Image (cartoon, rainbow, N blue to C red):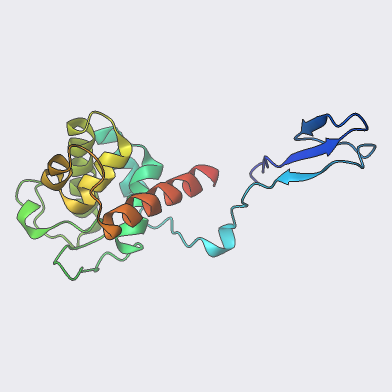
Length: 178
C-alpha cells in the first residue's frame, strides 16, 4: 500500500497573541485548529487503467516524456478509448488529427501502439519547440502550435484550451500520487 502524506497546517494563538503553526500537532496540542486543509486525492473517483501501460512506457522511454504525463494526456484526450473520434476528427487514444498521420508514421490511428507512439513523439516535438514549458506544450497539443505562437507564446484565451491544460496537469498530479 502506498504511503499517504498529507500537508494540513494547524494553528493556534497563544495567550500573548502569537500565532503558532505546525503540520504535526501532538495529542497535548489540543489548542491547535486546522488552518489549511490539503485537498485530498480520492482515487475512487479517478478512473484509470493499466491496459496500455506497457505501450506508454515504451513510448515514454523512446521520446523522453514522463510516463505519467503521457498517461495524463491519454486520460484527458480519450479516457483510454482507442476508438475515440472527436467532433473535429481527431482519432484514437491520443486524439491525433488526420493531417498529422503521415508525419507521425501512423497508418491506423485506432491501433493503440501506433497512436501512443505518434502522440508521444508529437508531444515531444511540441515540448522542445516551446523550450520545455509544459503548459504551453499542452496548449499547443490542444489548440495547435501556430495558435500558441499567435498569442505570443502564452496559453490561448480559449476556454477549451485553458480547461484542457488544467485537466491534464490535474491528471498528471494524480498519477504522480498513485
